[in-house]
Every structure is written in C-alpha cells, then in structure tokens.
Length: 288
Image 1 (spheres, rainbow, N blue to C red):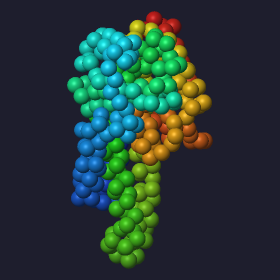
Image 2 (image 1 turned 90 degrees about the vertical axis):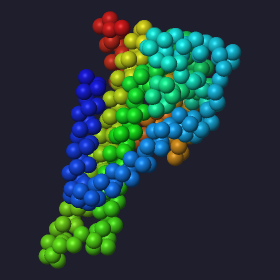
Image 3 (image 1 turned 30 degrees about the vertical axis):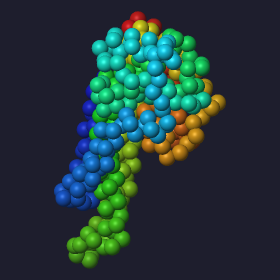
Image 4 (image 1 turned 45 degrees about the vertical axis):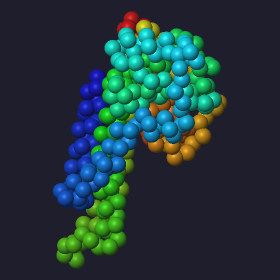
C-alpha cells in the first residue's frame, strides 16, 4: 500500500508540473525548468554517498573498532539479500542514523556516536534494518525524482515572478492584468502544493522502511523501542539546525530538526507516535 501511495503522489506531482508549466511558462518553459532541476539533482543523486557523508564529517570504521555494529549490518544485509554496505560513524551526541548511496552496490550506513550509547543490540538492529530497506527500496532515487519535479515547479514559479515584474507575458492590455494575477496565484500555490506532496512521498517511504526494517530485524518492537528512545534523545540533544541538516533531514531515521505549529504538515517524517503505533500493530498481528 505504501508503494501504491507513493506512485499516486508521484502522479499528482507530475500533474502539477504539467498544469503549472502550461499556465506559467508554456511547454518550452516547462522543459527548460525540468532540465535545470534534473541537472541540479542528478549530481546530488549520483554522488549522494560522498556528499552527505562529507557534510556530516562521517568517518569509515573497521570491524575491529565496532564489531557489534558490523555484525548487525552484515547479518541484516545477508538476510535482506543486500550487498554489504560501507559503515560510517559521525561524532555527534544526537542519537540518529541514515543510509545513503544511489543503489545497493554503492551504499553506506551511518550512525552517530550518540545512538550507539543509548540503544541495545536489538534496538540497533531495528534501526539498521530500517536503513537497509531504504537502500533496497532505492529511496534515494525516488526522493531525487520527487525533488527534481518539485524543483522544476519552483523554478517555473521563479520565472513567473520575474515575468510579472517585467511585463513579459504579452497579450492585450485589457486582459494582461487578469493573466498576471492568475499566473502569480499559480506561481505561489503550485510550489507550495508540490513541496507538501514531496514531503508526503518522503513520509510514505519512512512507513515502508519501518515495515520492511521490522520484518528484516525479526521483531517490530525492536524498532518501536528504538524510535521511542531516539525521539526522546533528539528532544534532549537536538542537532544544530543549519543549511546542511535542512537539506538532508529526510535521510535520518528520525527528524533531526525541531518544528513549530506546522511541524507535522511540513515534516519529512511521519510522527514518531504514529510510526510506533503501526509497529505495535504489526507485533500484535504477528506480522514478521
């Protein structure tokens, strides 16, 4: 069901691009915006492992340094029929983890030193299982496609704003004002809706990774217990908000950023309470 919802959201996002492109920039404007957005996101996708790991100063670790972590990653990767990913550590007290890489053959799993301090082996296996499912499901590719389409819509809006400022829409003077108002309204609304759908896609991928990770680790309660500790840990020791964490917040197992009144609406993650409840339902139903 999560895959079907993601597919529907991608269709809606594409539909917004087509409608907004036709209204704001026409066919030519839509193609130009899509090409620019694709170029910007292609580099991020192709070099995602190197870029994100470098952002957080992640360092590769050996099995001799972290034998338990290596054992968990190796066993779960074998169980999920996934190539053994590279293992990294970030010297950060905020307990969190993420996976990156454009496909299972170029993947890396990264955990913070903070998460190693508060989770037991079972809980850590739930977290690693979640991250490996992101790798197996190619969620980096899905998020890159969503970001490309949403970025093209935002670029069209930017083009529309400049066009309105310099009167570049043409047409007769008596209907130009109405056209400009409609285009500006589209330029404001379309990127907002596109961003919300992009975030909804991210949330659906989290649900899918939770379910797959719970099955991979063998017990949904491992991940449920870990999420409970991680949410509390991020509240007590939040990661410092900066441009890097805003751009990559969706990659972490729990949102490293603190939100305000619209946190749930504009969050890259479902609420932790909802995720835990779903995992508990899996455990009660014996879905392993």
